[in-house]
Length: 461
Image 1: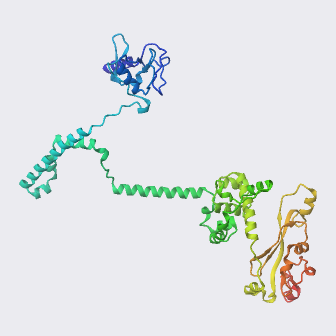
Image 2 (image 1 turned 180 degrees about the horizontal axis):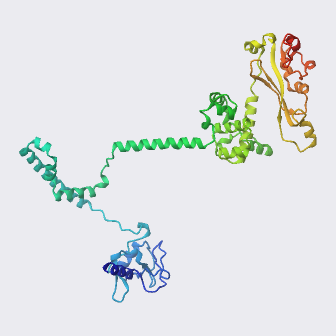
């Protein structure tokens, strides 16, 4: 019954009868009496000094107090409000609002002054010195052996309630300047856990991201996505081109400059935010060439926009075409002879093996261009190029691209390789590559499908 009465009294104290139109004038407080009947609203005191103290506490300096100015009960402590005999909630004499939004509706406890600290410290120091004297007297009478074997007695002997209270007071008063002593073992364990979690996060991040670092440990994957035989081969090529990539100009900026007749001299990477690392952009370009993935698929894999993928591909195409196209890959006769395989002992003067290759392209909208690029061999619109390799394998010649309908003989004439050949050299071609009348050197045509090996040399000349 007593609990029920206390609850009823509490509800009665908190709830006000009826609503009103008062509003709280404290900054950041939106309390109003129209919809909130649980609050009471109190007038400013008539005493000038007390009123000035109210204004200072609510941070309303220069505020003009009127008869309708109110402060709600949220800004007073529970003991500051009492209920009169008529049931009206009133304030205790000379109380000041102290609970606000800027102090989280809590009143800070006052810190003890310097003098109070000093008095407590001197008192406690005297008590500690007295305990030390008593402990020394105890050691002299009982002996060190009994002192060492009876720690409980010493603890009981020195456990003075007043001293314990004083020690606790010292701890509470000076806790802000004490140095914590964490467990070294616990700190070391936490450090190991943090390091382990960091490594796990890094591994998960690498597994989630589609980039070169993810496949760096698998030469099989590197060969599949880039056509380089291993990660080391890929990195060796990257080291060669890396010093020049920071001078690369974005394809979009180059086109814009061409349209406005402006010169682009500033590298793109100093002007725009870099979404991918340069090595990952290079990896994206290789994946596009090797696997033939669509731009949208690459955008999802690398977590970038499709237009960014298109820009990266166009930029790297122009860059590598300029960087690699400026390199001379044609080998001299002495260099070819130095690495000539033993299978070519009967054709030791072979300088290059030639063949044409065709690349499929989009069908042009113009009928004229369709007829020029259409290849009867591929039954599709293609671009055609002449490729030459040395007998021991390296590519030594690549021509420009021509329309797919051009003949092998015409492509040989326009490619410019005829100027590189001399009369003491020989070229090896397929039996359908008819260039004998326009080539000033010997032409070998090996009979790959012939079963007569004894006449092989005659057929090749």
